[in-house]
Image (cartoon, rainbow, N blue to C red; front, side):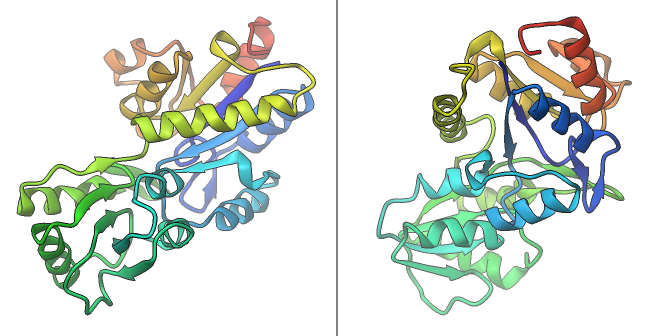
Length: 273
C-alpha cells in the first residue's frame, strides 16, 4: 500500500473548477487501498470548508486528511499569545485554538501584539499593512503561512501570500518564519499525519519509496518531497507547464494531470501501486 500526498490548487482544482479526472483518480487510489493526504499552502479556508469543497467534487475526506499551512503556522505561534492576523478564516480558526487573542489587521485597534501572522486574504490594503508594520517594529514576531508568490486560479495566475508578505518584510527589515511547504513545520505535520494514517492501515506503515508527493510546483511541492525523502510527481495542470523543460526534468514523475499520473503508476506496478 502507498501514501499519496496531494496538493490541491493546480492538482485537484483550479479555483472553483475541478480538474478533469482528479476525483476519479482519487477514487481509484482509495479503491486500491492507498492512503491519501491533501497538503495545501492555501490557508484561506477552514478544514470544514476544504472538506465541503472536496465533497462538491465527489471526494470524501476526513479532517485529519487535510493539512494546511494555517494548521502548520498555528503550531509555531506561542501558546497564549496575542496575535494580529492578516489572513483568511482558516488561519483564524487554527489560531483561536492556541492564542489568547486573535485580531484581524483590518479591524484592529490595539497597539501591541506578541505575534503577527500573514496568510492569503483578499482584504489587503494600506491601513492594515500599516498596522502590521507597526506591530512588527514594536517587537511582534512575524510568521507566515507560506511565501508562494502566485497561485493558479481558474482564470490564470493570481497573487499569493508571498506577494503580501514581501511588503511587510521590506517595510520592517524582518524575515518571517514561514510554516508551509517546504518548510519544517509542514514537513513535521505531514510526517505526523502519515504516521497516524499508517496506524489505521491494514497494509502497514507508509514511508519512503512507498509514498509520493504530487503537486504542480517544484519550488514548494518538489522541495517538500525532497525534505520528506519521497519521490515527486509533477502534474502540468497548474503553475508548471510542459514548456518549463528544466523544471520538468527535475521531477521523478511527470504527467499531464493527476489522473494520468495515477494511471501511469498503477499500470507500471510500482511500489506506489
